[in-house]
Image 1 (tube, helix red, strand yellow):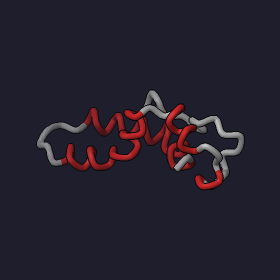
Image 2 (image 1 turned 60 degrees about the vertical axis):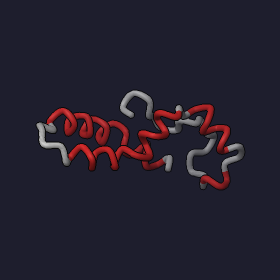
Image 3 (image 1 turned 180 degrees about the vertical axis):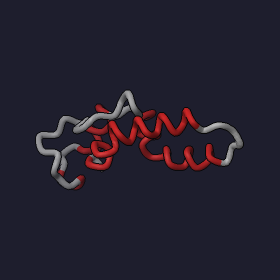
Image 4 (image 1 turned 60 degrees about the horizontal axis):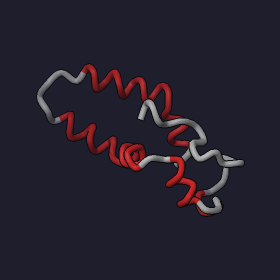
Length: 80
């Protein structure tokens, strides 16, 4: 997610529209968001929860989450 996510990833003319008001929304998403990135954005919390049950050092996972949250969280939430 750190390498593929960016603000206004679908290059909308107005990023303040409701999803239902975006013409050709499905085609726009398909053309600009890879299946892998879509999956990651949908299921990252589940995978993080699953990983927390593993009994090992989580420092690298925490560092990656921190990088994501500092760099991309507002762009990601703003596009939901």
